[in-house]
Each structure stands twice: as structure tokens, then as C-alpha cells.
Image (tube, rainbow over all chains, first blue to last red; front, side, top):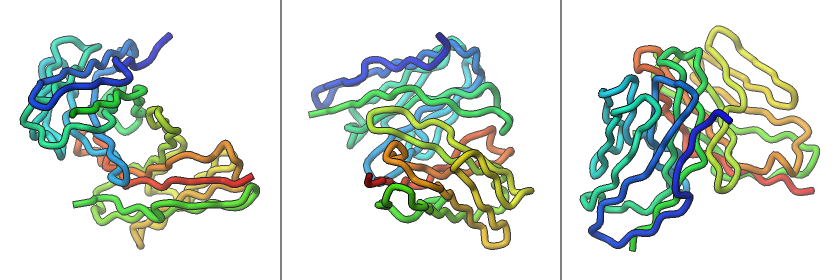
Length: 114
Length: 113
């Protein structure tokens, strides 16, 4: 089964703790993306990566960090510096940078920080 | 700054009716306009997409209308069904930004039986 896996589906953390969200894809896609979704806000880009060991900040990168050590994995760390971390986080991947490729989304992780 | 503006925020349509969602953009460098459908608790999935060299694209009951001069595009869902009840996002992308998408804020569509 090819696709994007995000785990866990629900995640709970205490304020002040860092938390890492997992994203794995077996589609052999070069590009991977992290979005944050809040009610009425649409999808906002946090970070994206076109190739291994390279990534760029999106529109709301503050308080987040990523790594891309393997092609199939793009974990997102929500640090204690993120002021309002409770949200639905979506990972996506794409075959390449060209617009000919469709962007596929994972099932998401809902993070709740109290 | 919202690069793509979407309206309405919510839409209620009777079964069999036409659902229309509108989007507008400012950046004329955008050259790819997809629509995504998202069901509760799931990730979005590509529904239909259009490039600015055509004014309309139809796939089954879903049609995108594109007005390049007005910098607007819209999604029409014909014969709307309860199973179409979902959140719909328009988006835009440009070749120079390596495929990143700029999303509208979404429209929550409810189709009553």
C-alpha cells in the first residue's frame, strides 16, 4: 500500500514540552510539506523540502523545526517556543517540484497542548 | 497576507442543487489552480485542477470556471449530493516557487437530503 503515514492520530502534551510529529511516505516522492490547519484559517505552510538535507521555511515557521535525513521521512518538531501549538497538522508529498505532480496529503495529527 | 481569497465560508445547498464556491487572487504569476476536498478528520484530496490557458474544466459533476482577466476562479458542483458535504479549499501555485501551494481559507459545504 503506497501512501503517507502520520502518527499518532491524536497527541497530547503539556505546555513547555517539545513534541515531534512523524511523517513517512513510501511514494518515492522528492518533495515533502508540513501544513497547519486551524478552523477558518485554511492550510498554512510551515516548512517544505525539495530534496534530502535541504528545507525551506514556509509562512509560519517560527516555533517549529524539521529535518530531512531520509527521502521518505520528514519529521516536524513543535517546540516550546510555539505560542499556540494546538492544531491539526498535515504532512504532504509530491513527486517533484513541477506543477505536473499532484500533492498528496497524509491523514493528519491532531495535537493538543494544555 | 492571504494570497488566495475564498468565499463563502459556509454553504448550505439542497440535494440536487448547484453549489458554487468562489476564489480570487492577485498574483498574476500563479499558473496552476487546484481544488481540494476534505472530509472531517481526514487529509485533503485533490478534486480537480486548471491551468490559466483554459477557461473551463469539467470532471463529472465538478466544473472549474476560470476568468484570467478578473483573476477569479470558481468551483461548481452540479446535482449536489449529501456525500459532497465536506470542506473545499481552492489553491494556487506558481512554477517559480517549486510547487508550493497557497490555500484559501476553505468553504464548509452541507448538502441537505
